[in-house]
Length: 131
Image (cartoon, rainbow, N blue to C red; front, top):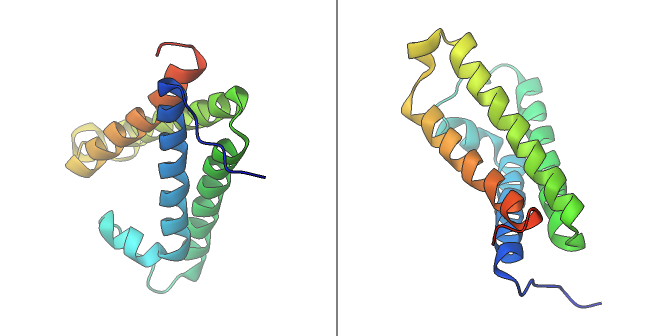
């Protein structure tokens, strides 16, 4: 069985987005402490359950991205895009409600919003035939 690499531009964008998502998930799964430090988060020192939850999230990211890359089906790319869209909604909800508006509007949160938006738009561009 040979590895499938897309030939259409739209599918290549969705493929690249899913592959990057899977790689980010691998990094989060195998280096959760570095991930937390990079995001400026703390509080995990005495609680290993937080690291387990972060590894769980990284594993889910890896599984979803890798399945979209390996199977290369439009419905999987659609599910991947919807997942990122719902995650983006949760991120915005957290910024607005958990941190009290202006306090939650940090540069890290805006960077996350931009990254998730870009990663989430690329599969929709392919699935809906915009490119």
